[in-house]
Length: 508
Image 1 (tube, rainbow, N blue to C red):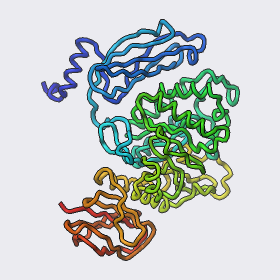
Image 2: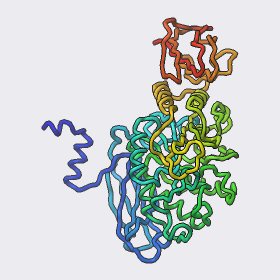
Image 3: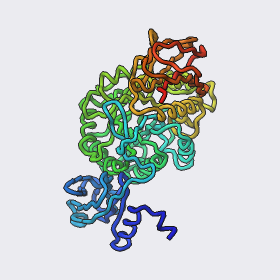
Image 4: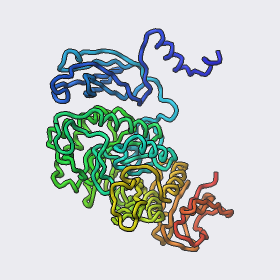
């Protein structure tokens, strides 16, 4: 009896129904997977067209299946409504056609909040309404490094610094990332003798494994579909191959709730592609991903026109994170500075920020109504001459461990933002000073003084309420409460140090 007292009503009901009827169950927003055996001759990637129709109470969702190698075909589906679902397959091969079944979608449990969506124009929230504040990082090639290094990366991520990871699907060829990947996306012989009509399922299995590992840590997988840093020919595919690749990754990955789609890293550096190509890719993901994951595109020097209605949020490369407020007003979308330069010591200017500077960019971005992403590029071997760009492990390229000091400060900011009221908006609270502030009118204000070091500030608070004021040292990660309560036009004394923030909360 003690055991059954601990089982929820739903759990008990579904446990009993499974015993009696053998009916499959799947938790809301998790992956239902149908596995079928079919032909392994010819070219299953181009000749077999498999799909699954999922039906519940008149709602019908059609998703594409995919070939997983060795005669195995799969269809993946993410149920977004509780209750009984039925399904039937359609295929041009009789062995895979008209396969029927059903399953019960059970309520989401524990920390399963569903996929991230846009909320109220400028914000993100999970499907159950829980706010999502994007604190991202970049590890372009971590999925291609093997289990030993990937395990170290995941252990680092488990410390709670970040909740989103930018990562490339195709392997990347660049300084400090010149090793060959574990797997290649196409069949053939490295480095250039590829059969672009046949994908390599082992390559994509490895990536989906990493997607699931990130999900277990509550981290979004921001998948970069194309990028220019290539020596294998994967950046110059023809349209037929691109279409096959896009349909395949949607079929394989879209049922995972923590997936985001980024069309490119630095789209404008892919000189062989036109703007019309990028518009086409965006349209394909918007149309074929039946679970409607977030879609973005990242720039090099030329920012994409994020007013495109199929783009869900603005992904910006730019170091002026205070422009988040300006971009919000221009694009009417959430603004994410996915790259604002990185903390590190490499020769290239985009990768040698101090930890103080990157921390400041985070605070300026968030207190102007945006979101900001982290990256770290510390070289430890031969730091003077940088002669060996292959052997050193930089977080930005391969993952591993974090050597910098900004990550703890970013985690500190994350706790402050996540403990604040939801849906903070830019508010001009400070008088005569160009400092940034977000808040909820009359209730909560979080202001940042950048690298200025005034000994005091004057602010205009509502006169009909009393407010608690806290001084935040964003570098030393301390919060000091002032004994005095404030209202109306107020003079607040400060420590006269840079990187100071002020939190003002209405007394209950």
